[in-house]
Image 1 (cartoon, rainbow, N blue to C red):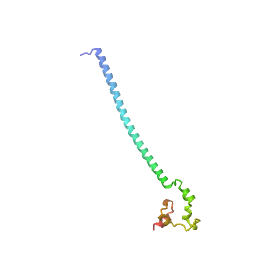
Image 2: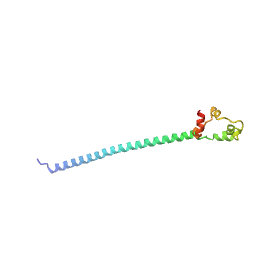
Image 3: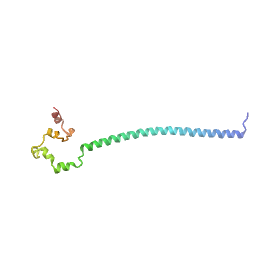
Image 4: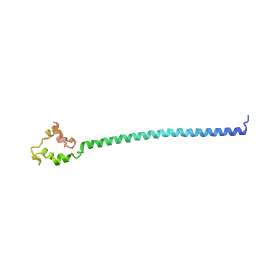
Amino acid sequence: MMVPSRDRATIGVVFAVLFVVSAVFGISKRSSAQTAIVEEKTAGTLDAAIRANAAHIAEEGTKIFRFDTFGDEDFWGDTLQLHKAIEGTKLRGVGQGVSPRTALAVGLKVDIDALPESLVMLNRK
């Protein structure tokens, strides 16, 4: 059975349209898959960046909390000269001074990492 030429042209157009549609669908399918992979990698990168930033902020906050005096050194040091009362006359201060144990007992903060190991071990005995 022979197909008339007009019908052959119609069949050719239908096949061409189907080919174009399937090609576009295949490309869009790949594009969405590739997009999903890119989004997943980006999300992982962003998550890692967020975690790194949170760790950095926590570290900076710890340093500020631990070492920043917020201007208190002017009051305690310059105005009250508390350091001289703690030192005592033996260490060029004033008064009897305060022993390390007494200073700790009344709440004086000490950075144990700044102390020599020999002093730390002496006080642990």
